[in-house]
Image (cartoon, rainbow, N blue to C red):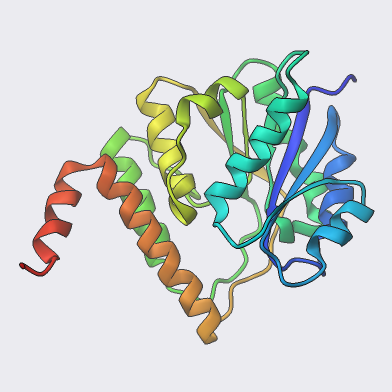
Length: 242
């Protein structure tokens, strides 16, 4: 099969897992390009990814997941200038060898049956949090579009180039998945959920994990506020008066 799909992997301080993720992604049918966006890592993420066979683009400072996704997609676009645009498969850096199970995400897009696929992990990893961010995202998507996603924050997604461009500019940071789903459904793009045997590192319960979830909550809430006037009005009421 000739290459028609590029894998984009946003990565920040993932030197311990990125090599396995890159190698598994590169072996997927139809994938002929793996781009790792080193989002301001302080470890050897970029060097390890390059040694594993990826093309690496580096941010000098951490700019967040959405910015890394846009940087990776732009790198692919530049390489596609003289040919047919590749499909874009976004994968998390910590998937390791389980990235080899991503092929079912590509197939509906390749066959013209979906404009974006969203992974549903068949095996759920126990999370350290209480699902507040997931519930917020799921309920926000349902209110905005009527769609009830199984795993609304799952970052493993395959899109056509046209769908990706229609969703730009992407929502900030960890709000990107929630916004992608809402924006594409509102623009009549077709979304399919696909069950896959993949898994990433479980989030813990230490202060770093709690800070990560707080950032997720903030970014998802902001993405929803922009897309739901009622939410925006309620947030404005909570802001102190000057």
